[in-house]
Amino acid sequence: MNLYAGLGTDEKAVTWVLSQRTASQRQLIRQAYQRLYNESLIDNITSELSGDFKDAVIMWTLDPAERDAKMAKEALKKSKSGVKHLQVIVEISCASSPYHLAAVRQAYCALFDCSIEEDITAVVSMPLRKVLLRLVSSFRYDKELLDIEAAASEANQLHEAIKAKQLDHDQVVHILATRNFFQLKATFERYEQMHGSPIDEDISSVGKGNLVSLMKMVILCIRCPERHFAEVIRTSIVGFGTDEAALNRAIITRAEVDMKLIKEVYPIMYKNTLEDDVIGDTSGDYQDFLLTLTGSKF
Image 1: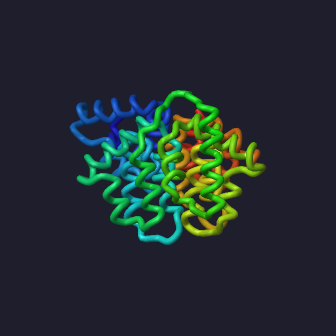
Image 2: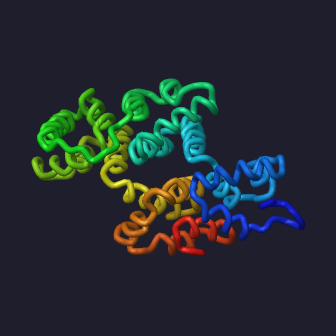
Image 3: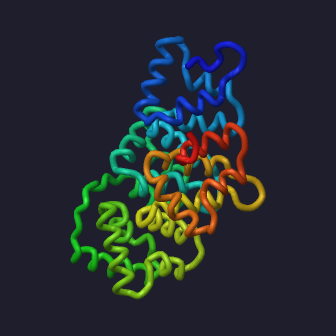
């Protein structure tokens, strides 16, 4: 696939070839392209495509760990108030497999000659720093292993810390950063059974600060990542203008993970399909590419 052979670029061919391939197949295409043409596929995409379509295609073509490392680095460059720009770091830590997180950390070091932990320490202030450092440094057990007694005990520990407004208590951070996702979901379920309200609602009752927002994001990414990403997509397209970076991130990073689930919960949450919202806020080759990744074209 020579992007600029002949006159102009065949954007539909780009979409058809790349969007239909898995991550490992896309990396093989990059390698074959380099061998055949002695040119970088990413560099040629950058020079031959433009706008939002170019950004989306590049993001999709990158190795997933490399892509997420670059997004994390970009997020940590931003001196912004609030926690929205830190979403990607929570997503990598709490809505990805432990193996993917480890690969992102390795890619981050290779790309930027420092660790993601070093950059978080340098850029993010306490208490957010404490939480994020533990999350990105963890390696959770990835099998479905449950301890019901531990779930009840740790649900109580979480409740006591939330009641005391100590969201960054060492034990809270330890539980959220080390337990496997199946265990945490059981703990959250036990929490609601024992204390009468979902854990995220009790966290909301603590206040409206950045730590509250971050911890709610952590809980949602662990408990129901498809709802988190549905929310990211919806937020990116409502109001004036479109946040293409967030829209790309949500669709591209989840296309091979849980896009089917996101599409199922989206109309339940927003009374509209994901496809209709994407169509209403995008156009042209960019729209076609995103819809293909959601499984709505080709």
